Amino acid sequence: MRLKDKVAIITGGTSGIGEAAVELFREEGARVLSVGRREKGGKDYLRADISREEDARRIAEECVARFGRIDILVNCAAVFVLKGVDADPEDWHRSLNVNVIGTAQCTKYAVREMQKTGGGAIVNVSSISGFIAQKGFMTYSTTKAAIVQMTRNMAMDLAPLNIRVNCVCPGTILTAVSYDFMERNKIPFDEFVATRGSKCLMNRLGEPREVAFAILFMASSESSFITGTSLMVDGGYTAQ
Image 1 (cartoon, helix red, strand yellow):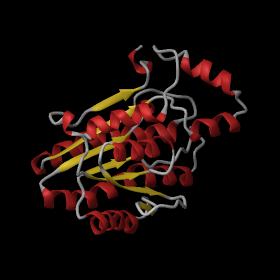
Image 2: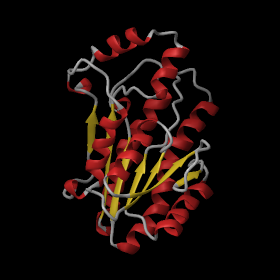
Image 3: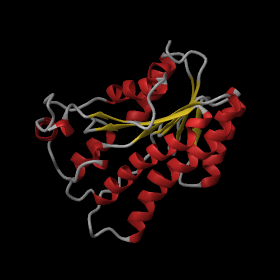
Image 4: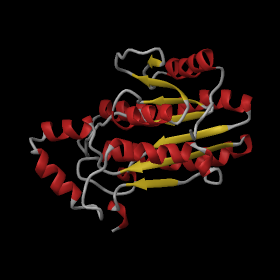
């Protein structure tokens, strides 16, 4: 029960890594507001679009209305716009508005509540794509690199408020996004797993829950002396 009596917001909490984090946080004793753009049942779910400032504000307000406080924010919501130099302004705006500006806005409003109760922890979800070049990934990779730097700046600005800020950087994880990528590019599952997995020291791909455990660590008191850090969860991909 590493998060007993803690209140957490997890954006992007209706699928993939975010959904795995919601499940794990609840197992560890947290009360969690799961935020997503998709319709989903459950009293502790909120439909919102973080690219809209009014929604970012509403997320924080709704969490406080339901649970009385905010201790943890996990910025997991993202869009996967995979374009290279042919990207048009619409591609860039869509990617930046959610992945970068949405993350910043959710943090702004959550911090206003965290400081009322003495501090908290923020975990941003970046990617190995923020560190390495990948063909045709420029729009996505740029936003993920921005989140890495945003994490450092947030950590510096928020340390006086007793708010820690870190990020986790997943490699290729078997989520709905990966399956969609396979379908759009007509790549057989076995080929995808073999090709991508061979690039990792562990010779396999990751599961959403494995990333969720890294998020849990960064959100819990077990990482109480860690802030401004990026943790790779990539099976050793970037170690080579």
